[in-house]
Amino acid sequence: MRIRNQSYIMPEGPSIIILKEAVASFKGKKILEASGNARIDTSLFVDQPIVDICSWGKHFLLVLPACTIRIHFLLFGSYSIDEPTKAGPRLYLRFARGALYFYSCSVRVLQGHPGDIYDWSGDVMNDAWNARKARKKLLAKPETMVCDALLDQDIFAGVGNIIKNEVLFRIRVHPESRIGGLPSRKLGEMIREARNYSYDFLEWKKEFTLKKHWLAHTKKICPRCHILFIKVQHLGKTLRRAFFCNNCQIWYMPGAEPAKKEAPAAAVAAPRKKRVTGKVPARVASRGKKQMTGQVPAVPAARKKRGVASPVLPARRAGKIKAS
Image (cartoon, rainbow, N blue to C red; front, side, top):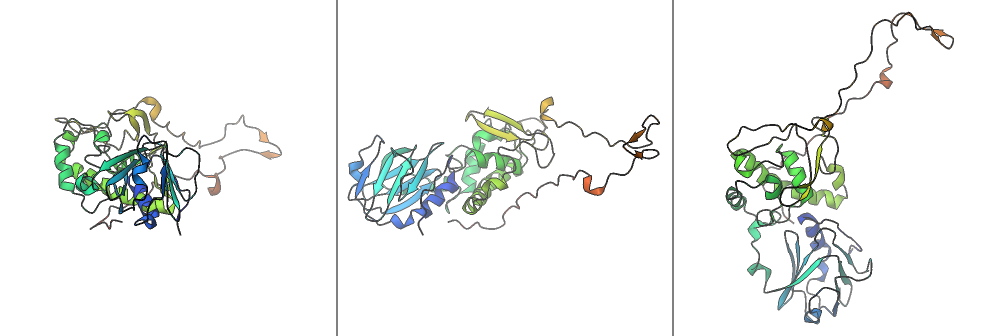
């Protein structure tokens, strides 16, 4: 069954994979009508069959015989299948059976086949992903903040802000750490988890449970330390939102010992008040008809505050990851 009117806000690589699967039935179909408010010549697409449907990172690609339609959903792009969700699509493609609508996105025409344009080894969700190349590219940028490095599409194509925040929380690295300060082991963890979390993201997105699994992104309390997360609205050169814990996420700088950055006073949770025990002062007389004397009565177990259990962090994947 074809998915209808399915939209994604702030799409990351896994969301593009879902879109690719949703429109797979259009492969081999001829475009009968093309229009939209994108600044391209849509007449080029008419009477052209869709030879292939693929993706590279956040780029959704419709391959035609003479060119490729590249769609980037930016921050607030969306799409719908068969039925429009609103007026003024950026691109509209009609087929004998069905139609595709793309909104608030960037549409470009690329000359040639994507295989001649893109480096598939840089796509974290592609079978050709190459972790060694990613490490080499990262080591060439020692002064880069890790929060910026994870969003570098030349290194981690498909990784977006959600994946960035969750990966850094998983590996316990402060987002302002520098690539050159990361121990080799930590650098390896970051590279592996960028791919691992992308596949977790894909699985949870298909189950419609993605937000339930967020441990850091948009959260207020650290599930490990039970103190307030730090939220920075515009962090690094990429100026994206960051959510992190100053206690368990370690700050790494080149030539310096790893350290925990001092958290602002407002970011530390207030200590819990101790329970009052001992004898009741003599001045306490009575409550209603019951006289209160001697020891303070024990608080019933049902009324005691329950402790907050630390969530179980997702286990790291072992072996090869099956790509879609």
